[in-house]
Length: 348
Length: 78
View 1 (tube, rainbow over the protein chains, first blue to last red):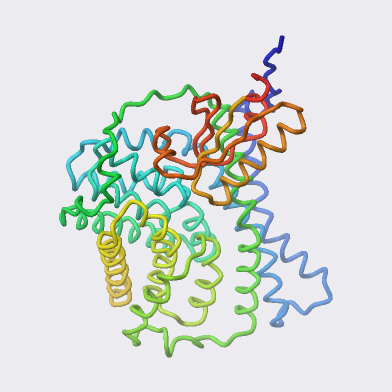
View 2: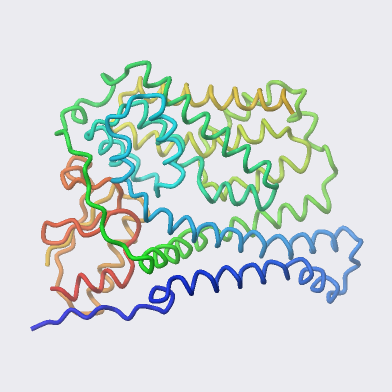
C-alpha cells in the first residue's frame, strides 16, 4: 500500500501575508543601501574615484545589484499575477468578443499571461478553437513576447521610468493596431487547413483553487527560472554600460543613428527582424546604442523588432499559418514598429 | 505508470523529460516516458502551453517546467 505524503511546505507558503510584508520591507531597506554601498566599495579599492575606472566601477557596483533586485521583485510579483491569468482564463475572457475592444484586452492580457514562445502554436490553436477572432489572437501574440515584465523592468532600472512607460505604451499600440488590421483583412482562409478543421472547443474553464501560498510558490519558481536564466546577460549589459559610461566618447553613434539619419529607423527594424534574443539579451545593445547618441525612437524600434519578430517563432508558426498570413503578420508588425520609431524621433 | 511529455522540442520540454526521468530513477519508480512532439497530438489533449505532462491519459500539468515537488507527488501516487 502506498501513502501519498505531501511535501513539507516552506514557511512563506504557510504564512503568505507575513512573508509578503516582511519581504517588501527587507527589499526596500536593502535598496536604500545600494548607492552608499557602491561608493564604499569603490573607496575601499586602490582606484581614484574621479577617474574613468572609478566612475565605471561605481556604475557597475551600483547598477548590478539594483537591476537584479528590481528584476527579482518584478518577476516574483508577475509570477504571482501570472497564476491568476492562465491561457485558459485569457481565452475565456476573449472568446466571442467583438473586435476593437477585444484587441485592447488581448494586448493587455498579453502582458500578464505567462508565455513561452514554444507555446505560441498550441496557444494560437486553442484560441482559434474557442472562437477568439483571428485579429484578437494576433494582438495577444504580438504583445505577449514583446511587452513583458523583464523588458519593462530592465528598461526602467537602466534608463528610467519614462523609457519604460514609452515602451509599454508603444508596444501595446503596435499590438492593438496590428492585430486589428490583420482582423480586418479577413485572412482566416490562410490558416492551415488542419487548424480550421480542429473541433470547436468551449472556452469555459474551471479555475483551479490556488491558495495565496501556492501563488507565492509560483513567484519563487518564476524568479528561479527567469532571473536564473537572465542574470549573465544583465551582468554583461551593465559591464558594457559601465565601460561605455567611462570610456567611449559621447555622440559616437549620433552621426549614423541619430535623429537626422531618417533611414536609421528602417535599418534598425530590418536588422532586428532576423535577430532574436530574449528581452534581457537585447538590453546591452540598447544600452550601448542609447549611451552614445542613437535616437530613442530608433533604438526602441530596434528592440521591439528583435523581440516581436523572430525567425524561430515564424518557423514554428509556419505549422499553423500559410505563408501569406505569416508575411502579412510580419509586414503589419514591422510597419507598426517603423511608424512608432519615426513618430517618436520626430516628436521628441 | 504511463507518462507523456507534450512539447514541440524547445529547451523547457527537454528539461522536463530529463527531470522526470532523473527523479523516477532516483526513487526507483518504473515509468514509461514518452515525448509527444506532433502538434496534432498535442492539441488532442487540449493543452495551450507547453511543456505539458499527461499521466495515464490525464493532463496533470501545462506550462513551464514542473517543480520537483510536483513530480515527486505524481510518482508517489504510482
